[in-house]
Length: 305
Image 1 (cartoon, helix red, strand yellow):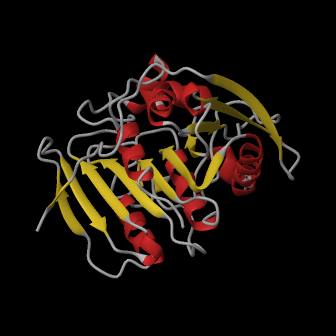
Image 2: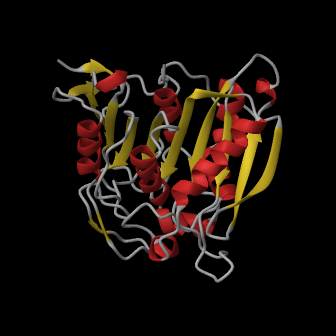
C-alpha cells in the first residue's frame, strides 16, 4: 500500500532573511585556515536552543553561492534554525580556486590531497555550539552533488554529531560505513541528472570520474541504520513526477527516504542557479519541487534522544 507523501510537511515557506550574517575561519590540524559563512536569523534571538543546519555546496561552488542558490537563509528565518555554510578546498597552493570536498572517492583537489574535511566539520560544530544556542540533538547536514557525497561521509564518520542528512544528487563515497549511531537520510535525485547519473557512471560535468550509484547509497545507509524491512512506496498526489521509497522503522528510530523526480536534472530543484556560469554547469532547475524546503521538512522531524 502506498503512503501519501507531503514534501513540505511541518514547514513554513521561506521569508525574507533578517538577522545577522558573519564569516569566520577555523584553523585545522593540517595547517589550513578554513572559511565559513554563518547566518543567525532574527527569529532565534529569543526562545531557547535551536537546530543547526550545515549546508555543503557542490563541487566548484562556494558558501556564498550555495546560500544564494538554496535560499536556506529565508527558510531559517521562517522555521527558526541557524545555518552555516562551510567552504571546501581549492586547487591553488593557498587553498583558493574551485572548491571541492573530500567525500572519499570524489572530488577534485580535496580528494586528491586527502583533505581531512571530517575533522574540519567537527571543529566547526565545536565552534558554533560554543557561541550559539544550538540544540545538539538537532544538528543536520544538507548537501548538493559533491556536497551530498560529503554529507554521506559525515553520516558514516561523524554520526555522534550529525543526526540526519538531506541531499540532492550524491552518492556514498567511502567503502566502509559503520555509523556509531544511526543517521537518518533523505536523498533526492532527478532521473534526468546527467552530471551525477542516478545509477552511476561518468557524468557530463567537470569531475571526469565514474560516479557511484545513488540507489546503492540509499540501500547501504538503510543497512547501516539497521532498517530490517523492505521500503514502503509513497506518492505525492499533487506531483506524479515524484516516486518515494521509505525505510522505517530503523535502529533507534532512524528513517531513510529516497525521492526520485522524473525528468529532473542536476540543478538544485526549485531554485535558480546563483550565476550564469553555474547555470551552464548544472542546467535548468526542476520547477515542481523546492529541494530546500523538502529537505528541511525531513530533517526537522528528526531528533536524537
